[in-house]
Image (cartoon, rainbow, N blue to C red; front, side, top):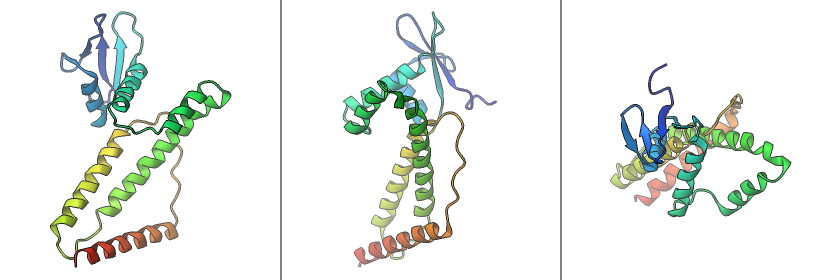
Length: 183
């Protein structure tokens, strides 16, 4: 197993400082969030007790982003999550969330692949810039959810030819609209 496949071990000292064992330096929550966005798994361990604190710190990273206005989780989702902790349906929630994020990742991957195939018939610089920006956005979103799922992954459903044809048709319509805007 290569170093990038193993989780990055972060140790929390009694002073609550976080220590990156690979680079032998202290890190912040923003640093840890950056590692995760770049596709790296992390594991945060309390040095004294040996307790795994990863979940606690990931939740803290999410809470800080939400409090800064980077609202990803709608209020109704947060409310439902709180409710799931108080009823028996809570046992289904982790599996449902994992499956939902996996489906979202697959969909975004397909959009990126399909969007890459759209041509710029008029050679408009604005179109190329928009296309590059959209691809970067989708890659960022996909990367930020990498590793969000755990456990056994269900087999992906086979997409029918009709669904693929429908997607191609939608892309062609989008390309046509963009061409008309450039005229």
